[in-house]
Figure 1 (cartoon, rainbow, N blue to C red):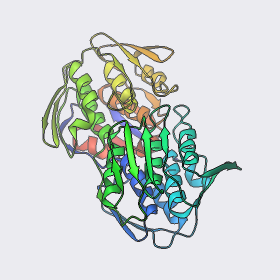
Figure 2: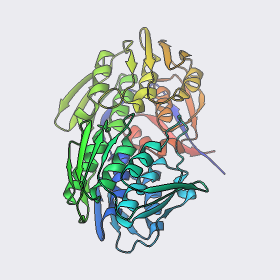
Figure 3: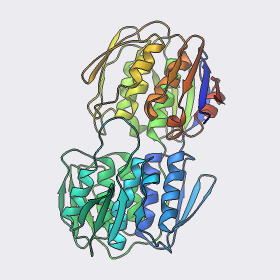
Figure 4: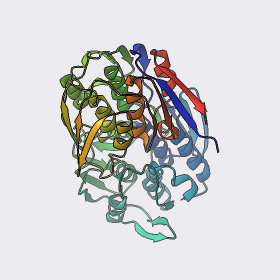
Length: 419
């Protein structure tokens, strides 16, 4: 099979205006939430990404009908007839597990394959299952599938040992139709969790505390159709700021929510990037050369693990040495070997990478290993001298809508081609 690649000739300053797409990680749980109600559900500001089409296929496998026009998806859940999420769909996308809570809450049963997705470390779903069991679901593993059954879930107190975004979303959705009140302690605080809660409230759910560490959900008997516009993608926003920064560019970013990336903005400003907020726009100007800056990934509202690789790419040309510590995933330095191919000087010890900045990267053939690693390679290639070829770009297509077209419009020399 022919694989698609990017050819990038570096050294072009990014200039112009770019519009940020809707957040995939907000859209996927919202699509799963359509299971909680019967009838037509409408979502807008949806990015055209492979994972979105996978979730559509999964919902259609359950019996839903869906249409995707422009940036709008309509999902008709009137005739759901299956309660199984099969392996061939779930294996490509971890977020498929988000149908588990809604199916058990609405229909009393679900059969969902154990999930796959990015190879960036263990991301077990034991916390999802613990939460559903505490709410009264009977759960067993059967031939690689999670089988969950419950007459009606019951409200309870659930404590997560570590904050889990999809776990919080799954339990929050399940709790909307449970009998009584569910309290989720040590809940994830990400904007995507808040966006889901706001959409569920529009559907008639009773939820308090989203965005804080304790979320309270008072169960209701039924929900009405979903009508919601998805928030902009904060990681895409931060990725474009970093791409601008590494090329000493000057761009305007539209359709952003600046407060969603406060931690990243602070670190980029420390590195010498000028960032000015104007409502839902950001004016960005990169430095002649970034200053060395240390970062440590943390759950939201800390510095996101999903920006660690891109920030590391920027630090490869900093005027000194930076230390980057990864605390979320144990296998998230796979991009380091590829960044070294550009000439980057990076050493790893445990969960810490030390990056000694050099004046100029050199173009090289590299290979993407996961979604955010692929973004870091694109960023490095934009600044590198000469030509770079990036292989396995299907990873980047999972999380960035038309990234090469957006970069080309900003003046980058980038082409997609088949091997």
